[in-house]
View 1 (cartoon, rainbow over the protein chains, first blue to last red):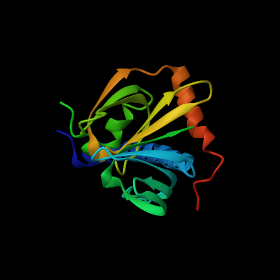
View 2: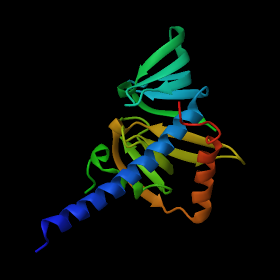
View 3: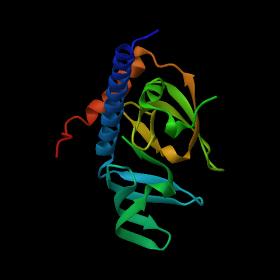
View 4: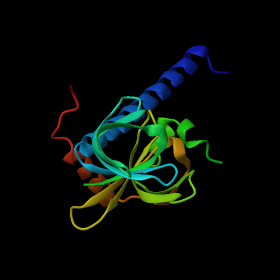
Length: 94
Length: 99
């Protein structure tokens, strides 16, 4: 049988590997958000809604995107927040 | 069977990085998206897919984690592709992440 200390060592090693993976993935994602700033982004949303806007920023939990010049069917909204829950995907060119 | 994408952990997501994947998202139109997986946000489980166009051009698609149903690897990435994806990240390095 494995002693309890051996188990906790294995657990902490696993946790460390997981945390490292988490940080690598998150840094890459944050760099993508940086690359997106001030770029024209196309949002594909539910109910077949497609809108275009200039990307500003995201909050840390990725719950809202802040955008400028949001082109909606009833006109251009100078500044807006888009709820991420309403978004399916977004695209931009590098 | 694949566990729900957003409930998979960072170690699971890591296995898809730098590979050409097909993402099935839970909507009727444009359900499938393909591209080289640059990263997965560990907070929202959103995927960042890259498709290379003409020389020096790339199109990036972020698929939100909450719509992802299934992710499948279609092609492994060779060293050249790993380098090309790394180059995209380096493009953004000029700006510091510190506030």
